[in-house]
Image 1 (spheres, rainbow, N blue to C red):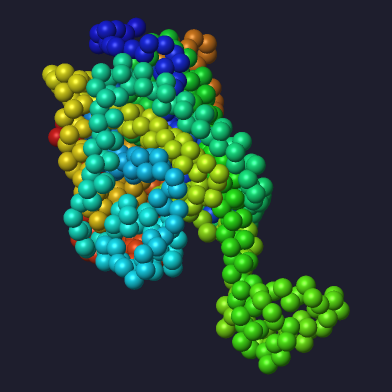
Image 2 (cartoon, rainbow, N blue to C red):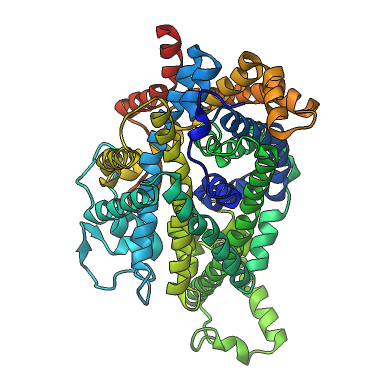
Length: 589
């Protein structure tokens, strides 16, 4: 049985194209630079326990539900929720607004990757060393700042972003970032202007290429010194962390956003399916691949981070030896053993070395603070958890400059990031375009895509300001978190209780045949998943309310400061500009 003449709706060329599109949407930047950070922060291998539990209770049921309802009703998010009940139309509009807000800043991240991609065709890489001209300032910042931090950090904050010292100091647009953003939106337009007919073709490359790169990086990574240390550090479980409720909240949130639940993209893609398609098998396949990708990407990331830690550990040991040598050289009256460097040690017998150390170790211990000895173990270097831009544009780039053929690996890595980002962008924008066409907007799809890209580009130029990264961080932290939790809660309640589990069960039997969904799906759709959504929503509200929101500013180093009043007001507007449509539409109707 078709619904409202939807039998003429365009469709995918084949099943592989659809699966790749869903994988491309689900597998994004978060799998590469968010999941490894959460593992590192939340107990290593122990984090996988709450992760798999939340995948089972929250991720797969909601993903299956969105695919099934989109395939059955053959509409985008607005059309689906309008069909279920006219009061629920605001849920679809809220999804569209969230998709728009996320697309704005997500493409800026892709633009950053483009900037680094274009800069990777140089040898040596431009972030491999600090500027060498002495006593000269660049953009009013002394080159000594680079020596105090690192070459990769300096390149990111000064050469790429030219970052301002505060969100209150917007500065002017950085032309390099403006140009990169234009390129990013142009690529998105080319990939989408014919709808799924064009994005479906592009997805063959954008969804598969990241896996090719990850496999290549894996075999290169495990041969690097320190790779095993990185893997051991990641997977060594700290079971005590499981008692921390924040660990479970991080797991639930990661599952939720990694699968793209609540965006409307999953519903939009599945609406182009044949009604008899096995959507249950699709949901399990895509969710499993997404989960497996996160774990595999973590293995790859930590082999490279282990290599970076190994290199830094060697540098730290060298500096420490020099410090100790200088300390003894300056502090001891008896310096007859000193010739040059530590070569004097070679001239001593084992007994003399022991006696020398025993005579002077008390002096070293008494003045330990003045020597400023640091912990040089690889484990201590790996303790610094980094995610997002810090992982991709600082930590990973630092590792690549020490690899043989660094420019090649840099090109491959940033090409992978671009493709991961584009796959998610296509699904996010489809969550806007499909509902617009479903509500009867009489404009050619090419014009809708062009207009959407131009408007997004104009607004997105805000992120190219010198304070743009601070603004982007607001969008990343607040535009999608609470609104998407609220949207998913209403979606689950709408399908399980308004549309009705029995009717939805009949629809699934119609599509798949057999006996329909069993007790597990009934329990998760009707009870467990809504409770998970509500609990996650309340805990997120509490975590936001208990302390004033802060952001990291960069003034030669990173420090945390409170957001100014206008920024807090903007955060509130950003959260409510999407979910406010749910009560507005219900009230108007």
